[in-house]
Amino acid sequence: MARLKPSFVCQVCGAVAPRWSGKCEACGAWNAIVEEAAAAPLTGGTAAARALGRGRVVVLEGLTGATDEAPRLASGIAELDRVTGGGFVFGSVLLLGGEPGIGKSTLLLQASAALARSGARVVYVSGEEAAGQVRLRAQRLGLGDAPVALAAETCVEDILATLKDGPQPRLVIVDSIQTLWTGQVESAPGTVTQVRASAQAMIRYAKTTGACIVLVGHVTKDGQIAGPRVVEHMVDAVLSFEGDSGRDFRILRAQKNRFGPTDEIGVFAMTGDGLEEVTNPSALFLGDREPDAPGTAVLAGLEGSRPLLVEIQALVVPSTLGTPRRAVIGWDNARLAMVLAVLEARCGVRLGGHDVHLAVAGGLRVQEPAADLAVAAALVSSMTGSPLPVDAVFFGEVGLTGAVRPVAHPGPRLREAARLGFKRAALPAAAADAAAESGIVALAVPTLDALVARLAARAGAARPNDA
Image 1 (cartoon, helix red, strand yellow):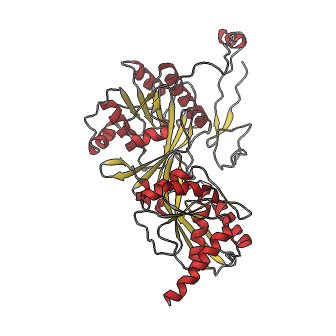
Image 2 (cartoon, rainbow, N blue to C red):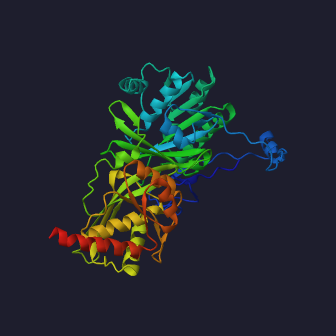
Image 3 (spheres, rainbow, N blue to C red):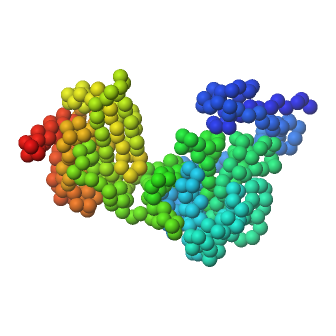
C-alpha cells in the first residue's frame, strides 16, 4: 500500500498547500500552515467505494407546490428571537461568535434557562469550563433552579452518545466548537481538520434528529470568527455578539441566516443580574447627548426593520501634519473619504488641511449609506463652529455628483423621530411626503451644496447674536 502524503492546511482559512510555507497564499496569514495527516482513500474493491460509485436516483421537484413555514422554537428572549427570525428552527445549527467576556455564555445560559422552564429539554455542553463553574454562573444570574442538563465534555463521540441516551433534546449548546475533538481524524483539537469534522458531526446529528444546536466560536483580533471559513458555510446561521467592554450595551447581529433576515439587530444591556433586553435603543444612544455642541448630528437610521436614532459626532481641527489625519470609529473609512471629497469638490468646503475625527456615539457601528447626510452635516457644523438645530434629524445617501439620493423606508425613521420629540428632518426631496404623514417638518435637501449653504447661512446669522 502506498504511503499517504501529509497535507498542509492553513488554520485560518482552511486552504490546503502542497508543502509548508511561512505565509498562506490564500489569506495571507503568517505561521498558520500546519501539517496534518491525510485520510486513507477508499479503494476500488471496498463495498463503500462501490456504493459511492453507483449512487442513487434523486427525486426532482418543481418550483411550484406547497411551502410550509419552518417550525420554530421560541427562546423566550424577544431580542434573540428578533435576530434569529422568530426563534430557533428545528434541525438548524447556529454559530455564535464574540470577543472573550462579551457575554456569549451569559446570553445562551439565559436562553437555556427560559426554554427549560417552559418544558423543553435543553443540554448545555461546556468544553472550556467545568460544570461547577457554569453552575456558579447560573446561580449568580438567578437561574440555578432551571432544569438545564449540564455536561463538561470535549469528545464528540461521547457528546453524541450522551444526547442519544435519554429523551430527545430540543436545544443543544456547545461552548465552544474549537475545544471539540473526534477520534475520526488524527489532529490536535482546535485545528482546521478537527473543527471541520466536529462541526460536521454535530450538524449531522441536528439534521437527523431535528434538535437545534448552537455552537460558540472564538473571535480573532480582526473580529472574525476563528477557525476555517468553511464552518460558516456549513451552519444555517452565523450570529455575532458585539460590544465594548467599557460600555454596558451589547449588540447581537446576524451575519448569515438561512431562515430569516440578516440585517436585524438585538440590543441588550449588561447588568449585575445578566443581560437585559433594551426595547428602546434610540433613547439609550441619545441619553447623554449634548444638543448645543457643534459637530453633532442625529441620524435617523434603520437596522433591519427597527428604526434607530444615533448621534454622529465630528471634530474638524487644523492639522499640523503633512498628511492630515482621518480617524473613524463606528463608520466606514472609505465612506468618510468619499463624503470629504464631495464636500470639497462640489460644495467648496476646504478640508484638505484639517484633521477629521468622526465617531458614532455609544459605540454602535453604522453600516447603511443613509448616514452620509448626517455625517456631512456634522462635519460642516464642526468646521463652522455652529451647532445644528436641536430638534432636527438627518438621513440621506450622498452621490459623487453631490446629489442627495433617497433611502429605503423613510416612514419608520420619521415616526421614530417624532416619537422621541424631534420636529424637523433634513432628508431627500423624494421623502417629503413621508415627513408630512408623520407630522414632521421636511427640510428637503436635493443636493449637498444646498445643505452646506443653509448651514453656512445659519452660522453667519448666529455670529452677530453671539457678539
